[in-house]
Image 1 (cartoon, protein in one colour):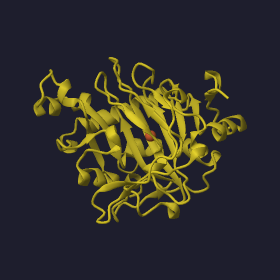
Image 2 (cartoon, protein in one colour; image 1 turned 45 degrees about the horizontal axis):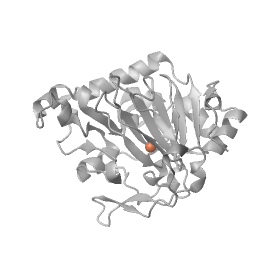
Image 3 (cartoon, protein in one colour; image 1 turned 120 degrees about the horizontal axis):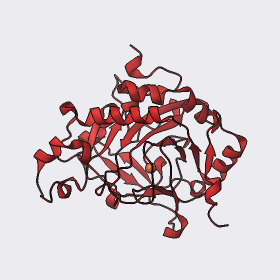
Image 4 (cartoon, protein in one colour; image 1 turned 180 degrees about the vertical axis):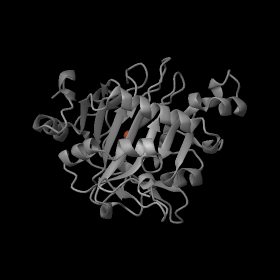
Length: 312
Ligand code: FE2
């Protein structure tokens, strides 16, 4: 069987998961819901992210560069690990090259972080009011329960910029290699906050690859101060197995935790902003060995709970 045709990739959001959409999800491991969010909502999230990257208080250390190149995360381990309970910015790997061609230009980075930030993570949904209201919503709950999560809980959030010309590729991976639960229940939500196209680095996925399961996991080191990988990918997929998934602003894609997916470099003049959250089914299933652990004062919350910043 070849890849599904473009017409079955997209389902118009109707306030609930239809049986047709669920069937597509079960067979393919992903599902695009068209028109999930209004333009006013996507604009609000973009504005909130812009405020964060222009706030001097969120300036990242020089070492906080985000890349999945060679499947390691070459960044400051402490900064990365602590981002689980913060609103932390990470630099684009090519930010130095992009600043007037000069190699070391920290000044330009500081002055225009909005153009050189790779992403913000990983507790936006609990600490920023705009992202909290968007994430802890009835529609998110309807999707999560419609796809089989009985006790959905959000464990991380990311704002992804995919900057014009320098937005780096994200190598093929399965999200459940990074969001560990037992049993594996990781469910990813990924909103296109701008058109996501072949030119600006849209998502690519291998339909049905979620059925191959997880054999590689990023875990905490014994001292719990760094990350390392356990296991190897059991299945490799040739490039022609990946299908591009272009999306319009406001569309949502659901990603099964074991779905193999990736994105390519953004070589265009247009950014490709996206917002993503990852859920698990029941916090008691969440692994104490995963990289993403919250500080005691900011425990994970279920979707039924009010987000941290709105609960006081
Ligand atoms: Fe991913």
